[in-house]
Image (cartoon, rainbow, N blue to C red):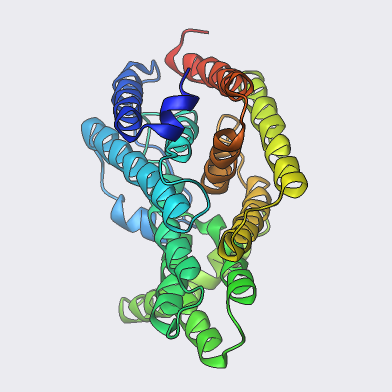
Length: 329
């Protein structure tokens, strides 16, 4: 099936990724829901500023397509560059594309997919700080990018602790790094408050918005079509975590530590799920750690039949939810 070429053959991986990306994107033009400008909550501040004007149908499709493609290859770049997985494994990118299209409509540009374009380089900078003599610029950039991400998708403010956790795991204590991280995280808030003051708006409105936003904690809501995809994904995730703890996290200290960071990111992303109330997009906040963890696990399974079977089940769940979006079910 797809596991062998995606984990061993770079050329075949590129072909599969491009074909799936373009094919799924082309099918998104067939969504039966009439196109309209969706209403996005005020809490996604920068998202609303960038996409406040009416965005055409074609612009929405192209922005979504490139957001998914860039996100997919950045996920795989992090997984390979930080030695989480083998250098020929492109399963994380493949899974990222499927997760993204399982939760994408033509109604609007999904805030999470745009916010991920900031979260991914933040993860890269914070993990690249491992064993660097001078990591101050990287840590500041990581904090700044995480802060910006929360302005495109407000609930990503719950991911802020991952920067602190990563520094604790990857670095020895350095008070200057902690100060720069805090400055980076808070700088977007400060800039927005200054702009609001100069424009005559409420200087502290952003704090009120975030405070009200964090009061929306609720249990996740599933559609019957998404339930199969959710169960299959969680099943494979449980197998992945069990594999990590039973077989080990890797042979290198760097690999072990960064996998711990990714698991912490997964835990924090699962908390975000309880703020996400769209029935067909429950797992989307976890798209980054899920793609890396499951993609790495499938590549490490020695029996190809088992790996292909698990991927086939995942694809079946994806077909159900995507087919429902297309109006086939």
